[in-house]
Length: 109
Image (tube, rainbow, N blue to C red; front, side, top):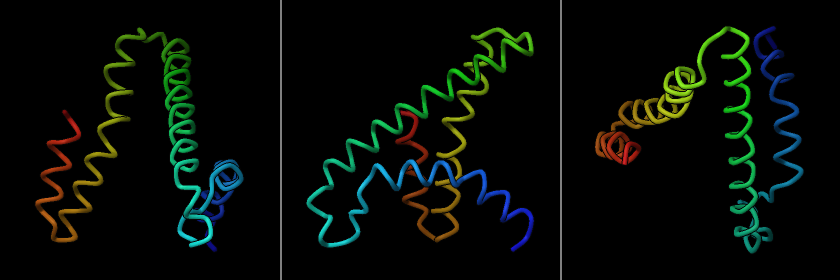
C-alpha cells in the first residue's frame, strides 16, 4: 500500500467504525427487515455531519476573519453542489446522459 492509501485508511477509520457499528448492512437477506432502522439511522448521521460541516465552516471563517454569510454562500454552497456535479459526471461517463441531466435538474429543485 502506498502512503496515500494508508493516510486515507487512517482518516476514514473512525468514520467507518461509527457507521458500521450503528447501522445494519441491509444487503444481507437476514438483515433486510431492519431497512427502516438503517434509513432512520442514516438520516440521523446525515444531520449530524451537516451540523458539523456548518460549525466547522463557521469556526474556519471566524479564524480567517471572513463573515459567516460569505462562508455560507461560498463554502457551504460548494459543499452541497460538488457531490451533485460529481454524480452527474459519473453518470455521463457511464453513458447514461438521461440520468446525468435529471440529476443536475433535480438537485436544484
